Length: 281
Image (cartoon, rainbow, N blue to C red; front, side):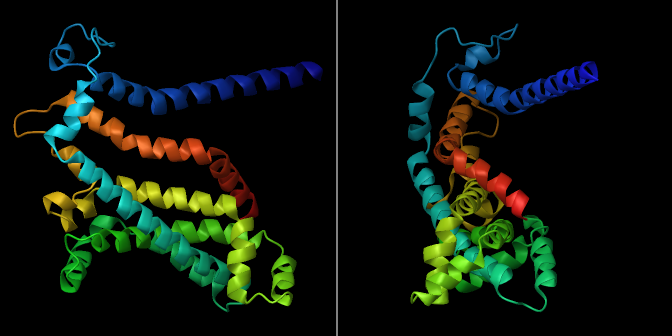
């Protein structure tokens, strides 16, 4: 019996190691390759056989990123749009999640199904009506043309994440706060939201990443040079017949930095948010 347990434990460890190797190869290796490309020159990229490490690292590509295009402006645009859309999304999602978790709604299950179904619509199928709406409102080439759609598209998953957390918080805490003089709104923001901090952070990170990486709407709605976002700005470095891969790779690395910083700062809350939310849901 002990031999069978040891064999089972051994194979479980092997599976974990294999999974970790696949994760590293799939996730870390492309990032390392892009970084190594960003510090090479054009000649090294065309050498045969391939050189994996640059002979003379060229960090000047990172300075060239800001000289060849107004990349600082693109970065600022993405930061403002992603931040505001995240705040709007999490705020609205908190109200929706509270209603689903606490209020005795008659068709709560149907509403939840509709929320899930709404998240399945691809952006490309909605781009024409959205463009007409933004043009009618006069919002083309403004921040609002992206803030509102980004918040809307991230709203279903944020609502579901927060609903799972709100359902796991005892109603007695909320009732005690209301007895002490808090309104229902005050109990939500002073009791429920702080206790669901891991879920709030998880929803915010997901909304921010979705907004930061979005390309199609940014390309369609904001065509003015000073209103482009980072994903669209990276595309501008390629010419009609030239692809300066070191420059493009350097721009990609700069684009990834904010996401990496957010994940490093909030990694514990993200992990606890995903795991606890899955258990409570």
